[in-house]
Amino acid sequence: MATQNPSGPRAPVSPVREGGDGASVVLERRTQRVQPPKLYQVVMLNDDFTPMEFVVQVLQAFFGKDRETATQIMLKIHLDGKGVCGVYTRDVAATKVDQVLDAAQAAGHPLQCVSEPVE
Picture (tube, rainbow, N blue to C red):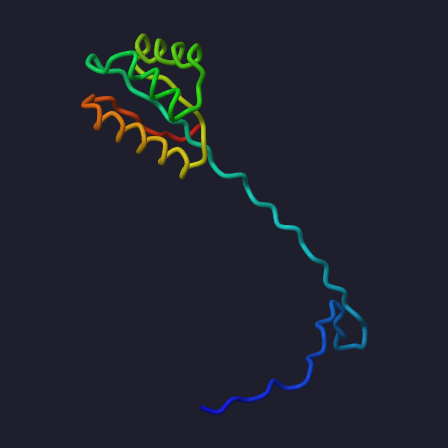
């Protein structure tokens, strides 16, 4: 296998180009505008079998809520049928949903949790 030494140093690329009539053209750098990532809310759904205390523990463990806030969210879930646990980027929201579903399954509870886009 033969190797070749790189040729001499290359000339730096200049932002100035010569036009056909001898005039110089200056290229400007355009700034790119990127959109912020779309956010998703993690929503826990009510059921008649999962103990309220378990829901509070899940909110504290996976969403970093204090006891009082977790209790308020749990009551909202209980009374309204669903409640928002947090708002995250898509990947983080999907991970939170998986954590909640795994914990519920391990404890033998039918607790359901979904993520949906924030509007």
